[in-house]
Image: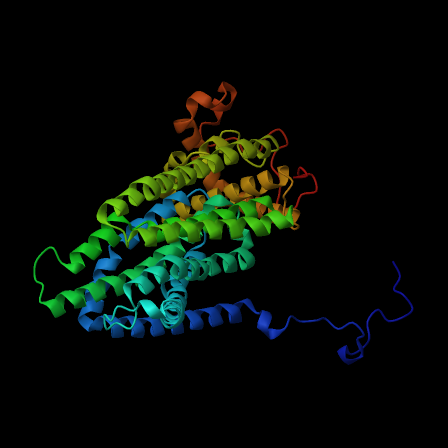
Length: 450
């Protein structure tokens, strides 16, 4: 082909008419991450100073130690729910930090201002002269009406940020529950330090040395009876965002309404719980037994059901890729079972060491993301960049296949033997690369159009 008789490009960039445009400096992901980190750190230092001032140094240490107890258990529970397609750690760290620092700071400041406003306006004539500046009625009204709105909105902000800026990692109900739960766990952690530290200060002021004490009662209510309270409330907001994410680009009005409906439900349940604290012991226990426990059991069932549904989706969807040659036929059975996945990682660790186990984990993660992405497309809610994302995930599968496919096939044959057709038994855990179409290089023109 001959070159044209005119220059294809001006001789100097200064003469370009359509110079390449760079994104503004404030669009830098690194800059946004640094800014978010600095703001969260500043919020953390501020909330630390506020809590220490209200509880004293000794009360702060006691509250910190006691409040830490439920945190590992709650995080472990949410990580188990999230184990099918794990949320990146950076998202979970952000969610926890937001709940523990930013959301708590907003809640303390806003609740204090709202309580003061109620005391000086709405409840001005009902002050009982307790010396605290607010009456018990004012504090009850603030805890029941103001605190749920402020606190749930502050926690929901973290979910909204991740929903907008980490959408690729926010695919459905499980992701919504996990992000909401981790955010609320961080919020409850800081709030418990304040409550337990203040209770310890009261006991010290009264000279209380034995049980029952304010500290012991607070510990029993907040750590033993209801460590799941805040995660339970905020999970309702997360479910709304999760359903909206699963709907994809369809039904814009519904996708906006669902998170708002979840947030409103979280506020109502939170208000019911806070209001019950001002009732007598019997009424409080009635609210706990008739509302909190059933909602907790229902949401636990929903989380487990969603987890199992994702596993069934992975197994069903990946069979099409196995038929096309991207996976060995038995592999979808292993990828649809957490037990088989663990078996495959253990086999790789014994054969190839920790690096092999990591490769298998990455292989399983790519296959899971591929299956759930494909399932969204089949429901008609594929993201705009679906082809590019699918090709990227297929490339990750192929580059890790030599190490991961044999052990994954072996795990399938070990754990799903009754369900695997006899003609696939000849794989023996090591053959089976390629289906009827053979192997496909990462950019082959002959690969199936998926």
